Length: 196
Image (cartoon, rainbow, N blue to C red; front, top):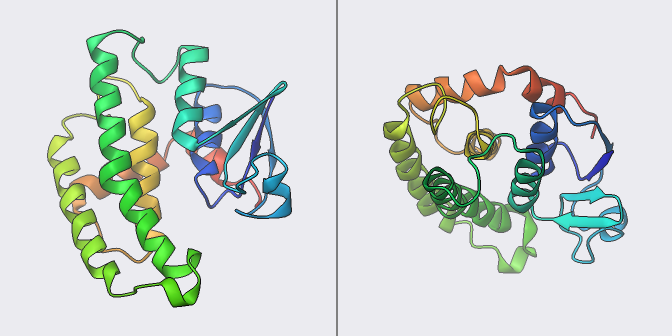
């Protein structure tokens, strides 16, 4: 059985949602970033971490890819053009959505007060809106790639949810409705109800 380390309202949610989607049991250690508990599994204190036997894995997207490959679920097979397209979208989401949200978080509450530049958040919000518009134009079906849910669907939905919590401008109706359809999935709801 896997163990997920990290607060539900963090990137750990991505990992828990992934595990729910692929039907793998797990335990959950709810803790915040840089907490003593988090540092037991990752010296930097960053969350999430995934414990799989004697191995401790870090970085939410790396963990998601590990689980997808290990269980042959929510992914195109490695070494195929479909996987290359999936990876391209994943990396785009990290660069164009996740990194922007993380930069805003650093200037909101992560950096010490004297290192924060609140004025940067307006440009980050504008950049996120541009990326959200591009993603919205890309949606042609129920999922971002093909006829089944894949890692980028979970990652994009989490980023959209994060943007809402961070007070970013609302995404357009097409993307918002798509994200809602993803949040309506039983696996998302199961992960979201975990304490912590």
